[in-house]
Image 1 (cartoon, rainbow, N blue to C red):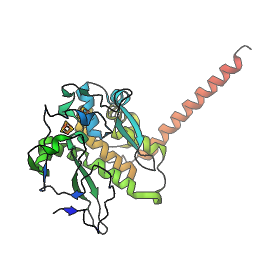
Image 2 (image 1 turned 60 degrees about the horizontal axis):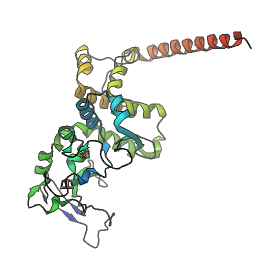
Image 3 (image 1 turned 90 degrees about the horizontal axis):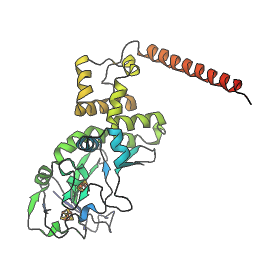
Image 4 (image 1 turned 60 degrees about the vertical axis):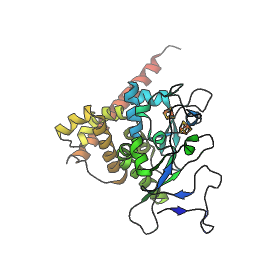
Length: 298
Ligand code: SF4
Ligand code: SF4
């Protein structure tokens, strides 16, 4: 069933936006078709503002044959997703323009691996938790921008069919737990206080910089603390999707105390000992540097 925001008793929160203020469910129909040869071809990719999910980054960095750090450096910028400074990732545009860097005269240069936001267009989706409801509700709406002629094409299909056609289901499934983490972090609000820089850095590493997260889980520090089965550990070394799913489990554990990765019984002592060793090394290094500075001739 659709909710019509034209009802005068319901206030449209964005009266000037291109959002068609009709709430759609999976079985509601839309009229839309995008095709090569349409007069507006590529117009939608000339003014972009696209936020990337961990799965978007994984698909794009593998397509381009880059490490996650190389992809992030070359093709993205960071921004703060909320007042707490949760880091988000946006696609860079071509220098001096708002045009997508992957746009070619023939269309999208990374089409098979294009981000979820590109697959959704010209649909929007939002998740809301009604007061008193245990689970959030997802609903859709049409985004009708003036330049987009796809809305005039004579084709109707349901939201469910459009999602299938665009491969959105897989992308949503892969991002589901990560999105829940963001929602939970946001809704935890000021009672929990501002997250530490360390937890923000961990969020960035486990969410976006997957190749360096792999280096982290292979480090002695990680093995001192967590008890990972050898078979799972081997998978994490080679399988990006497995690693991404493990990264969200890890984030839930360190951010919310939702423990699903077993810790070693002597984890606390080992961690303390390793920190002490590191600090002793740092002190030794500083002492050597100070002695060297004192010995330097005037
Ligand atoms: S990734 Fe492809 S579909 Fe998405 S904005 Fe860029 S060119 Fe367009
Ligand atoms: S129909 Fe819309 S989505 Fe398709 S190319 Fe034109 S502007 Fe882009």
